[in-house]
Image (tube, rainbow, N blue to C red; front, side):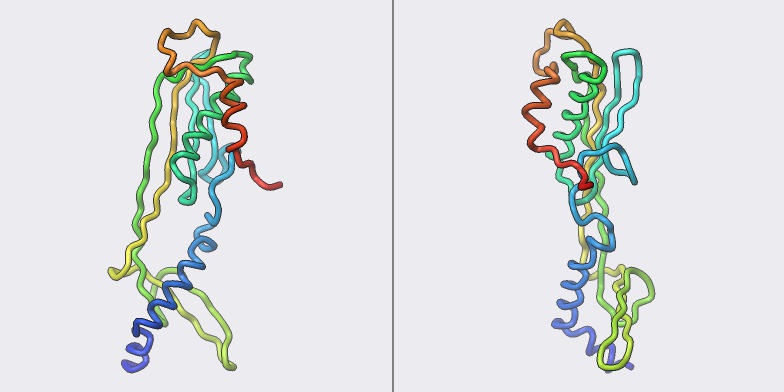
Length: 184
C-alpha cells in the first residue's frame, strides 16, 4: 500500500490531479461564468428595497467569476432602472460600498482521500475513485464582490454635488452595452 501511495504522490500525478481539479472546480462550484444581470437568485444578482418614499437600498452580488468592475456597473445600472421605474429622472448616491469576501481553499491530490470533491471513472475493466481533499499543500483564493448603495430618486434639484448625482437615462444608455443578461 505504501508503494501505491508514493506512486500517486509523484509530481506528474500531482500536476495531473491539480489540472483535473482546475477543470472540474467551476463545474463543481456551479460558478462557471460571471453572474448575469438579473434579480437575486441563489445568492447572486440584484436586490433593492424601499427605505422611504424616495430612498432605496440597491445591491448586486456576484459569484467568484464576477469581477469588481462588473458588480459596480450592474449596481449603477440597477439604480438607474429603479429611478426610471419610479418615474424620476435623476438619482443621488448617498452611500456606496463594495464588500469583498475572500475564501481560501486548500487542495491536495490523493487516490482515496477521506473528504472533499471526488470523481469516479471506468478504465481498463475496473472502476476507480479519486478524491481531492483540503490539505496544506496548495491554496486557491476565491473572491466575491457585493456592491451596495443607498440612493435617493427625484429631479435635478436633489443636490449641488454633481459627482454623486446621475441622470438615469444616460446611465442606461452608457452602461447598457456592458450588461449581460441570463440566457433564456
